Length: 125
Image (cartoon, rainbow, N blue to C red; front, side, top):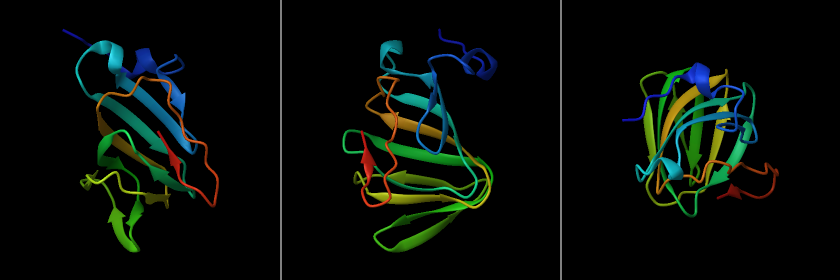
């Protein structure tokens, strides 16, 4: 059985500055679950062009307000909203306020991945 508390992850190598916030990684590849679970913070006012070429991702918003844009369609994000990138979708993630998302990745993240945010290109892993 694996038990982890956010307080045990914060300020460790599982607390990764991903590009426009922090990704606190509860489960990674070496945990052997086949998926990753993160508690992710997205900085207020940020815009990130992201793409997951090697992973599927689902996110559930528990705090804040923002939006995700895929193929020119904008979807609002607020507490209680889930979105899943089921086609390795290139997407803009925008945070109007600080967003907090619980995210699941499959296959698992190694644990050290982060985004290189460049305005004209998507960041991927």
